[in-house]
Length: 218
Image 1: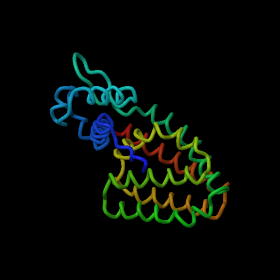
Image 2: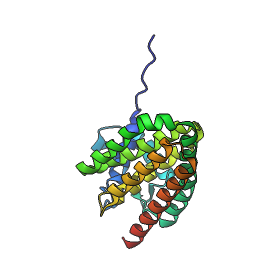
Image 3: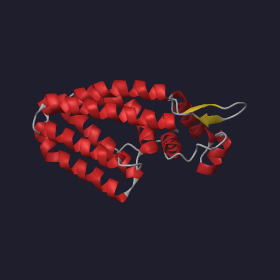
């Protein structure tokens, strides 16, 4: 028998739909999220909506509203700082290990991830830019040979998606990001672990400074 392909549950679909609306900034001005209203809008029962909202609240995307319902939680600069401090360590390690263990895979398979990001940049498609960014970093995690790096970072990618949605397509940000990705890939492909680690750490630190500065300005 063929193994059955895993299908997202209804709760997962509702979760992703609401999260996508948060990432796109379309729920910022909504005074509150009410389970019954969301269930009617999405055409589902209250149970998957309730479960999805609970998960989003536990992850810090939502908070209790006065009286009834939930509000979209603001992005706090302190949380961004903490998140990127952890990410800088994980990404630097991933790139060092990728250079040591996966340089051939990086040289062979990596360029298509860069081109995918460049195309999304040219098209001005924020959703595709975010997806391409995630795939590039996950590729580095995979060729690092350390499965715990991806597992450690997985819970934080939803927050990173939201942050990227806040700043992409402003100024020269997308082009700069993919220039830095390309430089990291080149270092990994040549097997230069020291350079790959330093470029990755610098890339994440620069991104953190940019995100925090824009949040404070906003």
